[in-house]
Length: 258
Ligand code: CO8
Image (tube, rainbow, N blue to C red; front, side, top):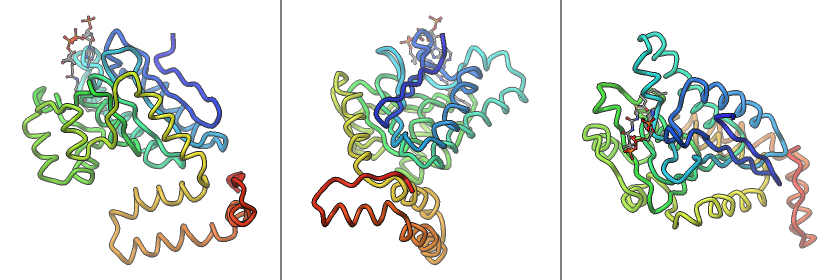
């Protein structure tokens, strides 16, 4: 049985972490399935959005596989941490938006995976936290980089320093997630967001995603230069012409990503 389920239908890929018996903990094998799948998706024009979720009722992902980690030497642990970083970088840099659909436990490396998605929908039963800090470890796949950028330095420090658990209501309040819904509506909401994304232009979305993910950390002038560099080629695309034509012809545009 694959540890990652990948189903693409009608422009949306659903990736399911499929180790429910281990609360979908990230093992090396799971990373080895997830990495090439994200690389494949990144090059697919027919995929407009990616949803990541966890199998079963209990967890999105309970972090890295601790049983596996227990028997690893420092080099192996480091190699696994790099796998997490690589996956998270792929999510940040792939042209398609990604949506984490989070139910139940969302801990450690699983929390990092969710943070590197572009948006997060949580079920009312979602619980977030950094057990690393009680394990003598460190959220090494990028949480220390992304979390302060998302919720501010002091709030990120609170969560790291105390390793306290955050429920879905608080997660919404502090900006860890964008939506909280009943568990039964979790995937429907994620798909509804993906459907809306599908009405927009893929090239425009990819460009603005890059501008937000990269430009936000640049100086104002450098971000402005990136803005221009991303914008200019769009002016010459067929999709841009199609978007304007469709507007005047009062029809839905048909974007081809070219
Ligand atoms: N790894 C491996 N197996 C796990 C993990 C995990 N992280 N979490 C749960 N499981 C397994 C349990 O061992 C158990 O399996 P079994 O029945 O065979 O013993 C099964 O899942 C169900 O778990 P529990 O019986 O423990 O369920 P509870 O409801 O009692 O508890 C908890 C749920 C609180 C989530 C509990 O399972 C727990 O504390 N899990 C560990 C959470 C954790 O510490 N995660 C690791 C954080 S560290 C990290 O993610 C990365 C650090 C380094 C960064 C590198 C980045 C790539």
